[in-house]
Image 1 (cartoon, rainbow, N blue to C red):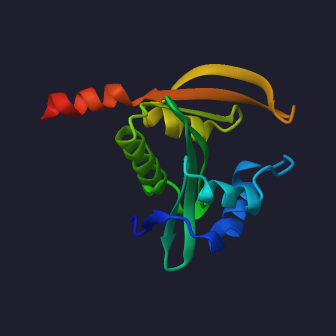
Image 2 (image 1 turned 135 degrees about the vertical axis):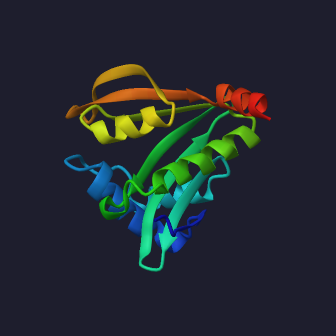
Amino acid sequence: MNTCNYRLAKSVEAERIADISRSLIEVGLKPTWPARRVLWHMRDRDSIVLTAAADTGLQGFAIMQFGDTTAHLNLLAVLPNRQRRGIGRQLLNWLEDTAVTAGTFIIDLELRASNSAARDFYTACEYRQIGFVHGYYQGLDSAIKMSRDLRTHCANDERQR
């Protein structure tokens, strides 16, 4: 059951977000998302840092940066014992709704080619693979580039009304 509160991140959570990134996303890599970088995105008017929190603390987070025509999902993570409960989907839905409201309809992301669970998650959320980059992650792991055009989603919503 998903009993999280979804909200913009608080600056006091930057270190915890960085810790989760190191332990779940950047495993085996030199960390590139320290607390100061997370804080920068919290303050950046073109970025959103979301959290999913419960009484027991932070359960997941997502960071997305908006450009003129596309948005880039930088990070999305959910604690292992809370995965497959809809938390990642809720975080992604919030970001996609925000993008549509802002008039940004393309969301791009990269994920480690070795992360089949993340690839399955994004595929289930209608993202499609658009590229592959050898050695993208510090020369140690390759990346799969994925994208979603939210205009298709919006057109389907209009047809259902």
